[in-house]
Amino acid sequence: MSSNIDAVFIGLGYIGLPTAAFAASKGLTILGVDINPNVVDTINKGEIHIVEPGLDVIVKKTITSGKLRVSIKAESSDAYFIVVPTPFKQNHRADISYVESATRSIIPLLKEGDLFVIESTSPVMTTEKMAKLIWKERSELKDKIYIAYCPERVLPGNVIYELEHNDRVIGGINTESTQKAVNFYAKFVKGTLHPTNARTAEMCKLTENSSRDVQIAFANELSMICDKAGINVWELIKLANRHPRVNILQPGCGVGGHCIAVDPWFIVSDYPEQAQIIKRSRETNDYKSDWCANQVIETCRLFEQENGHEPVVACMGLAFKPNIDDLRESPAMYITSRIVSEVNADVLVVEPNIKKHKTFNLVNYREAYDKADIVVWLVRHKEFIVMSKDVDKIELDFCGVRIPYSL
Image (cartoon, rainbow, N blue to C red; front, side, top):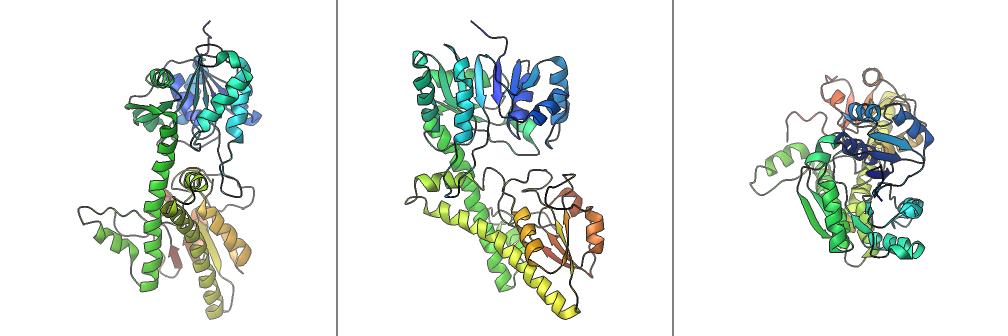
């Protein structure tokens, strides 16, 4: 018997809400589920709780039309999508407890012919573990429901476009499950859908972000070498990239976000002897944040020594990347925390994409720049790039705000 709901999306964060709303905008009847009642209330009013260009319009439209509805509890459907966080624990091992909890919540609702898909970034064999969990509780459904894994691969700030146009990798626990999932995604995804098996799809997601982490680590390591050698790393990278087969990325103050800063550890923890380069790159990018903090601390010490008073320091940006409000695993926030706790200074904290922060008192970016003796550029937000430079200020640029050219 078919349900009136085409799909249930469990988890309405930076990926779950855009995906649910976008699928609803394509004519599917979607129920979004989140355990946070404030999130549920906000969305049901046609509003959003995150910053993502264009998402507010789609949510308002789909809520108004009735194609999207949000609740704290799942209901019977023909398809279920798990889009919840998978952080790592103290030992850098993946915490799949949210995935397991979300899976358990829909087990009583499952019926023959249903589709169950995990989108949450997960260690290899997680999909198979959830399949065994389902079959343990509902043995009569073994081989009678379709179970697959399809990782998201969207860029915050451009999620709506990429949800529609990016290729997707879809892997089921068997061929029938793969095809069932491919058929569903084809209803709202224009990108090519690449069928594979669940383990390969899980490793594909981890591999994509580990590859990017390694490339960023090279740029970050190069930036520290160039600082030691008295070389402008931005100019060096621009010149090196003139080689037809070289494409060095831009360095930053570390690596943040729930993907690149986390996913490589899933490989390292499961395959510690083999994942040597991946582990070293992850450590390099983590170290870059401490290196940046140490640079600021030393600059503040010298300022006080030379001027006889404590400096005013402006920390420009808290998000993990430009032009978003996402603070997860943010190196900028880590550096700011160290500066606040370790420096004898008046520290002004800036993040133009959020209104309030539970720890820091946020200051307008222009006001902070005008008052500061030392300006620390941590995130390359669009507001910062167009600001005129005051030659009397000390500026520490860890993200390329002041580079006079485009790489």
